Length: 355
Image (tube, rainbow, N blue to C red; front, side, top):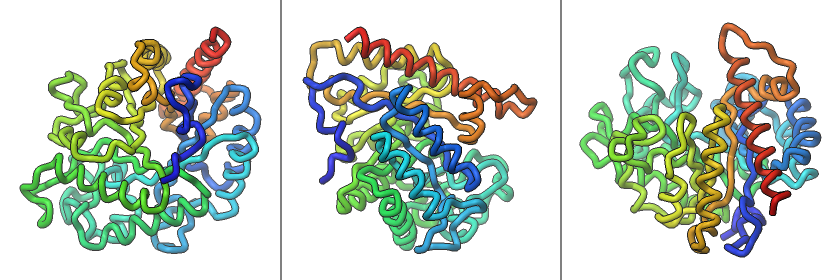
């Protein structure tokens, strides 16, 4: 199996924090050139060497053209992004949200809008009221035929060795409204889907990345239902392959979960968002593991993946100081995440100089 990038060849003797990543949403077609310029101009000076690009259904799929969202990227647009990353020695990893995040607010995304029978709660929650995000049913007999086709097409067009499957904030799973999942153990349901996706990627020599929140007991830890699980999926952590890179996201505080994942045998990157003090505290946590004289655990700490959760064009404008706060809060999010990104990566460069 591929190691998913040269940095993953490194062992405990290697330079710490091999992954210095940024997570961005897929750009609009007209913003591709802006993003490629940002990659070429900013990534080398900031030290970014991994870009996770969340595509979901914003690509003009040939395998399932009916699933392409409005303003989906063309193959030419993707190849421009691939070229920019190759020129700057940045590993590009596409992301397709699997299982959860199949809707946002009142919009159901194209998978369940087109194939409503794939829904975990079919016919329920009109206009997505009373729920956070829809999920697909992992036990529907036809779901993986579609999901695998999308994964394979994205992996091919992006020319990658690793793939991010999302899997965060899954609240609808094992629901009584699902004729296939009703009454089933949610940890096993979640683990089965993780294994199914992992096995497919492994067969194609692709390393699997995913968010780690559903593997954390939100009640015992006190972390809660967003950055951890209170719907009993956390037992899945002991039922899946350790050959997965966990993106351990926490935005409000810095719990010691990187160590938890490392102790469980996973390689891990810590993932902050827009609070600089939280990002630096997370950096301190993983530095502590690297300096803890346990080479086995240290070898599993890969680095950081800064998230943005805003339109990439807005993030780029905020990075250059071109955004002003707006009443919608979108620009404020861009400003805060851009400032967090600058401060975190400045700290990483400072560590490099100190070493």
